[in-house]
Image (tube, rainbow, N blue to C red; front, side, top):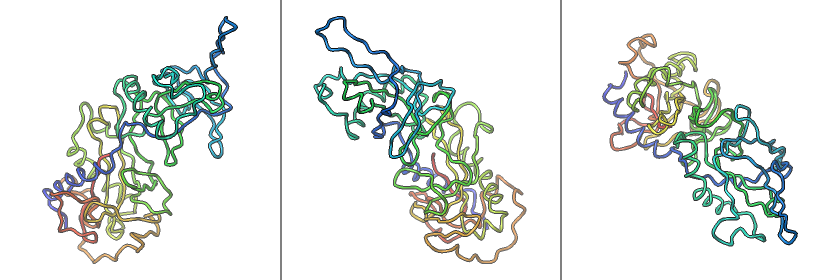
Length: 372
């Protein structure tokens, strides 16, 4: 009733290659168009020239330097308040990597009468002025597929109008609506893995993943958070080793999550997991997710809706009734040589020249994997 180890290994390899390309993130600048809150109290004193003829230097909206962290209180419709520098061990929404003065930019673009840069221009400025210095500040400890993004903060509009051209470059964690969320600790010392808590539902949209509520369309439901550092130490364990380990861990998690092997079989869902690439491991990421999904041949995910432990649909239809089967050995017997659960239907993310194209979306297959 189970696939051969050779077929399983082949499927894992092709699935990883196909979906990694689709879901990987990157360390490039995100166009978040973030201005500091208007009510932020300037933290540096105004500097006035002794010469009466000279114009005073405008007060900077913050004196935060590299290594500092800042926080603010989010408000409705972007009306954020209480912008302030805080200890990085406390809750914060931004870690400063470098401080730039756009007033020294070698053009007249940011002169006294200029308007703040728009979204597209801000993205280019971030790539030009923020990415290199931020990577240097983090000493390379930035997971290109992780939860931190390189981003800028510009002065509030009133400070810009008064002549402040400060731009803070640094890192923040962004939610599905491009809002900065609170974190603790320095980014280079964190596990930066892009993972979700158990019970979370995740939607794949283009090349991004977004957490959503399970009553809305989604691609998989998380069953377990796995810390790979408890199994692997030292250099990066290749994807193949991660797959071998997570195959048992995530299949066991799927059975436990749904209430047993029969429940998993009848759900028609496949155990599924993320893996870490070398650049993520080298940046300090160690966490991955186990999940349940339903894959289509060709490398895409079916649309799930509803909590998989209760009533749910697959592409708008309830799970197909499964044929009777012979009793399986007790879950866990022969684990390591019996890859996955033969009753979990769907070829999750199956694609690529090495894929087992004979397995359709409603045929019994094993689980599948994807790079984080």
